[in-house]
Amino acid sequence: MATNKFYDLDEELGEILISAEAIQKRVKELGDEITRDYRGKNPHLICILKGACVFHADLMRAIGLGISVDFIAVASYGSATRSSGEVRILKDLDESIEGKDVLLIEDIVDTGLTLDYLLKNLSTRRPNSLRVVALLSKPSRRLIPARVDYMGFEIPDKFVVGYGLDYDQRYRNLPYIAVLKKEPEGGARS
Ligand code: PRP
Image (cartoon, rainbow, N blue to C red):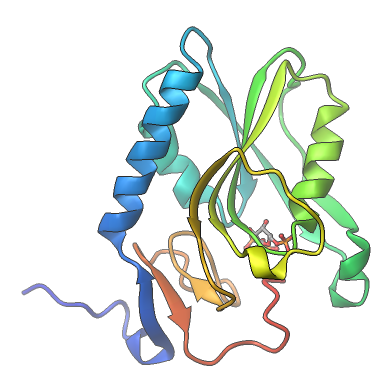
């Protein structure tokens, strides 16, 4: 029998902000748009681990072109220095991006610090082009302007989980985006 339960976690979650159906529809639209824009090219899709892994996996299958993929993992230097924008690379790309048409895939843009660091870092590696795809954006939390070329949804300042996004490494496997009932202090993702 169909059930809405997900590992008995429902009591910890508030409203479903974006349904699984709405996400899949938007991912298809973004895939179609990218397919049109990159006609004749082979975009290189870089997944920012871990949060973007689900979006990355779905988006690449919505793109009707030959693509390649790579993965990068980053972490901020902790809350005390977070506003300084210091980010460290935990796992770097496996391959050079020189001459490639890079699409940087992010699950959520919050303060914009992670994206700003990565765009500066990757642009020194001489890609042919470098654009950003973000599933979610919280414009009200921005500390630094962030350029997002393909945007899924703008959302209010609520702590959300699911579809790759975690709280304390949990909830990444929810097929929808839900609001956490008890918001962590500060509201920052990390
Ligand atoms: C989240 C998210 C972005 C970043 C956005 O990652 O995936 O990479 O925070 O925040 P910012 O705009 O304020 O920099 P997180 O550090 O939670 O790691 P994770 O992807 O491994 O969950």
